[in-house]
Amino acid sequence: MKNIRLLFLLATIPAWGQSSLEQAKKLYEKRSYSEAKPLLESIKDTQPEYAAAQYYLGRVAFDEKKFEDAADYFEEATESRNGQVAEYFGWLGDAYGSIAQDANPLRQGFLAPKMKSAWEKAIALDAKYLPARFSLISFYTQAPAIMGGSMDKAKEMARQITEISPAQGHRSMGNLFVREKNVPAAEKEYLEMVRLEPGLTPVLGNFYVNEKMFDKAFAVFDGLVKRNPLDMLAHYQLGKTSAISGQRLNEGEQSLLKYLEYTPKQNEPSHAGANMRLAQILEKKGKKDEARLKYEAALKMDNNLKEAKEGLSRVSKL
Image (cartoon, rainbow, N blue to C red; front, side):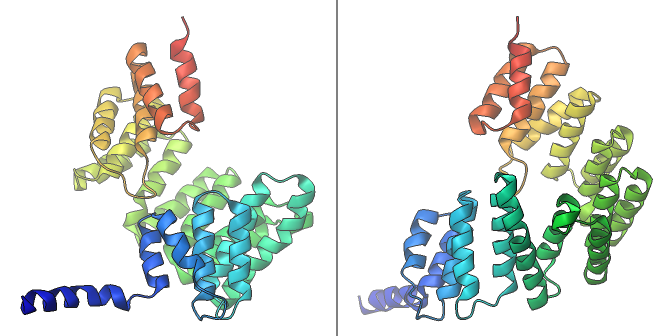
């Protein structure tokens, strides 16, 4: 009996040793937001973990698309003791940017310098913090010149990224050339990106899909599947390419069916998207009833899929 009690005590020591912040971070990573929030809110502004707690409350609010709340939390984090952290400022800028997307022009003008300043502060704190550099590139390419927008500044930032992470720098430059509709220059950048970092090959494939260079897109994803038949993301991309191009429909259908047997990880294509692409293939094959069921399944999982709504409207017509 004494040994059993000792084992129980030893097993519970790690839990006792965890701070509220450490417990909350693990809960956040599991997306258990309702359990993480009370722990984070219990951390007082006199405690050294307060800035980090406010940051994670901001991350929770951001994930829940409560961008105003997220900005408030990130502001509190950056203004607190121990709050001079690049990541905190980077997410503050992202929160401002998310608010600006749905704001009126007057408020956008107010938010623009705040988001730019937050991302610049993040880079000042950590020159290698790439998310803030990516955000600044988006800012430079989308903001009007009067607010600081500039393609030249965007390209200079891409060149700076190349010095930190060559593959990501070429990817960023490729994105900018796409924006300028300079397809040959963009392809050159993406090919160099893949040479440096083969793991980014799907980016090249998606570029080919977007540019309707379907033979090259299929070659990219065929190569990935050949190298690893269990690469479910490559199967999804093959199915997507088939759905968009109208080519190799049977193979595309089989690839998407395989993907639907797989459980996607966070930030991987959802089953809603896979059902939508499968519905597009079935529609192209003339199987309208089956396509309708798949469009409905996609929208049941994610009612914001515009292409699924359009597809359902098409196949539902008499």
